[in-house]
Length: 246
Length: 242
Image (cartoon, rainbow over all chains, first blue to last red; front, side):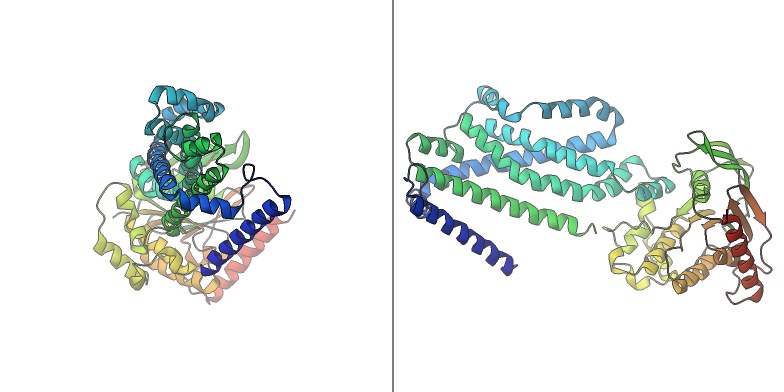
């Protein structure tokens, strides 16, 4: 574990060094690419501002994750439990993927306003399909032997679903969750770009417009850290969820 | 519990091409019927038809139990794979059936059955923490927990090492005494040792053979048994040759 952290720190330090070297050697002006030292300074000087906007984005992401995962899980369960639902809902589900979700951002802003909910919905739309599809695949691929056993025991359909198919599908759900942890921030930031008065995406646009490129990079770095932390947290959760499944 | 007679007669086809048949199989009531044969002749399919499980074949014929229709609730099923759920304890796996039917399981009885199969000290462990032979014993306890008069065994010992296999045969013969058992196997020694009735399934049909002298469970070193299983193996090899 400590070895892995050490490795990560080493790679990060190396990349930062390369970045600084590139800026220094190519003599790039700071309004094109500020060096890491400059970005760190901007981060330090604007810590409170960035922190506030990061909190807004984090809230959007977490609320989006909660709703998106809940909705995805419920849909997958419905689809798995009912052939009728599969016939009716599945084509619609695939159709939603034919529509680029990013293109919906302006419409969502128009309908839901500049506040929290247009971003939450954006995140929900982005993670809904991966979660639904991963969990549904897991539910439909229960090892045949277990289902035979359940049938020979005169199991009810509901009990088979909850006691065999759902636990057996948790590793599949976990891969959906891991994806959604990375996708959700994308949704929230796109929502902020299209129309917002707060959040890291908004701050980046604002800084860009005022040629405060160092601030923009500082916001970007914080966003990357947030996504990374979220990914690690969800991965840990998924590992615990699936540890008992093997 | 009265162990019923059970019989199957008919033929099976896959997409129009014949898999087996016409065959006539009659299980010994209250005893072991061994269905021996090479892989791919449809032994397992036959067992799955009786168990009411999905087979992917078209079966034309009938399956009767004590002269009447088949009662799926009187049949327990055990496969080559132990089919233990990895997220449940050994005890939880033994008690699975009742839970799947939405009933409350009899914990004391499950614990008793686990100690009968020699797993009394492993009740709280997960399947991954016990050996392959122990897992198959847990599966046997789960099958016994269902307490059905008919037990269908689909090569349940074939993945075990020789010693564990012989132990499992002893244990199963004792614990399943008095039930109508169908054992599907590709091992002539196993069929010779355990069968009250022995059927040989081949490409050209199903043949009922005279069992070796004596009653099961036959001793592994019985000379009659050894020469019988040798003849059985010869016959299997001879038939398998082109």
